[in-house]
Image 1 (spheres, rainbow, N blue to C red):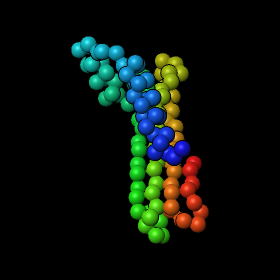
Image 2: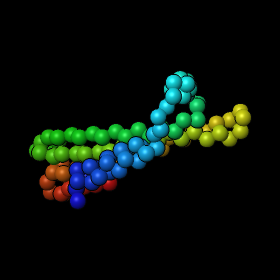
Image 3: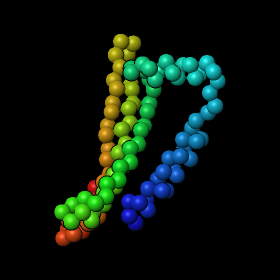
Image 4: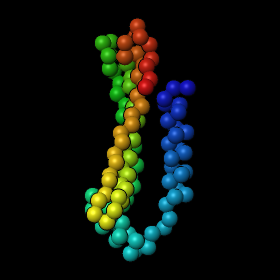
Length: 107
C-alpha cells in the first residue's frame, strides 16, 4: 500500500482520537488555555503534524515525494524550579520516480 493509501486511514484515526479527547471548554478554561499557549514553559503537550507533497522532482521531472512529519513537544516537571521540555522530530518520506533506475523509496 502506498503512502497516499495509508495517509487517509492515519488522518482519520488521529481525527477520531482527538475528537474523543477534546472536551467542551468553559470561558475560564479558554482563558487559562490562552495563558498556557503564551507561556513556552507551561505544561501543555502539543503534537503538530506537517504534510508535504512535491511533484515534478528528479532528473526527469517525473518524480513525486510525500512526507509527513510529527514534532511533539512534551514538558516534564522535574521539581519546582526545573522543567524538561522534549521535542522529538520524526519524519516519514516516500518518493516515486525520483530516479527511475532505483524505483520507489520509503523511510
